[in-house]
Image 1 (cartoon, helix red, strand yellow):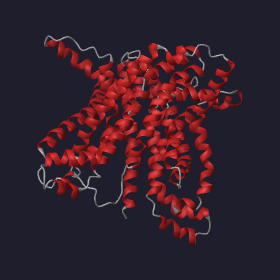
Image 2: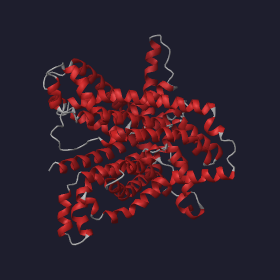
Image 3: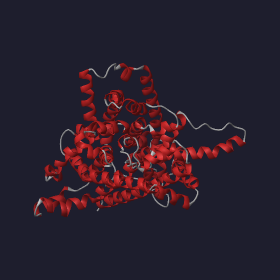
Length: 530
């Protein structure tokens, strides 16, 4: 691409910064573990990697993640069908609401469902049934599914929008609409659906916040517990090797599917259901579609309604928010600076991906931090940055900023890659020829064209950082607690009105940030179609 050949080298001076931030946790964990293995100070490895209990725990965690993934693909496709059907009218805004709920942290969904079951139990006992014990694997599965469902729904919708209506037209000459849906529509959307299910598997396997609230031990929680009990870096890293192997192999397997993803192209083949099924929608598709709508409505309104009811009044909400102003300030500061750091380094990473050669290898290298569970990222950050020469960094809120940037810079890089790919090289060739300098070219052409993607990247990283828990729990210095840490601690000690008020505040903050990101992406899409 001419866009990247011109000035790409100067932008990529920031690529080492991207790699230093995102890869240093894994690199230093590997170095510390190698030192311990060489010196023989690690002791018996069988208790860490090959113990029967931990292998069983890894198997149970994989089963839980697989069940969340499969259910997410099914319900995500059902919900995607509904959103695909209603692309116009009032119901089209439901799509944006579903997408915004991607940003809501899992612990908010957990708190909402706990409140919902507490309200249902009196009704259950009133009809003579035993009260529901909302602990164990089934509640963990349900809340993880509700938490991650918008991701699989969004990817399924993106896949459905790539369906070629002409192919469906040709197929219904020889078969029914229902069979055409199964034989033509679903296979064309399969790459997106599979990618969504794979992401849900990785997210579920790495999450320990929801299982811990429902008294379920999972492998990622065992990694955190190992570090908490020993304070040693080597044990948790060696313990996580099977986990990293599983997630890395999965990331490698889904790369061909991710490479096929199309988002905002201008192809005339993109169509809503009304164009694909020009006749009546098949009955089976209608049933599945409205079931999907029901699941989406539950996923959206259970958190909102229960948090509002439990908060009680505006006065209670404002009082709790005022009492948490220090945590709110810390959260906003960390989120702002993490998002700010991710903007330039993600441009460098995206430019590297877009340049010619070694596409799969570069994708895997840039996205490798995504396979690390949050707890391991926090432990790795401690191994990398907790040094006397860096005491000013590690002893301040800056370390939380660095860890958040390490976790979420790959998301920013993917967004920037999409934005860079959409820029027409001819637009930048003009400034290359007539521009006074490279700086003039960037100021007059490239940055304005990339601005929507930059803004979307900023607000998404901001929102993800505001809800980050697993890594922050490990590296947060004393006196610098974030709002997420306060909520997580209160979840274990009751005070539901305080927790609900804080969760509601976080929800409002993240939905606002997500709305701004969606507006930037929408503007970017309009620019592409000019």
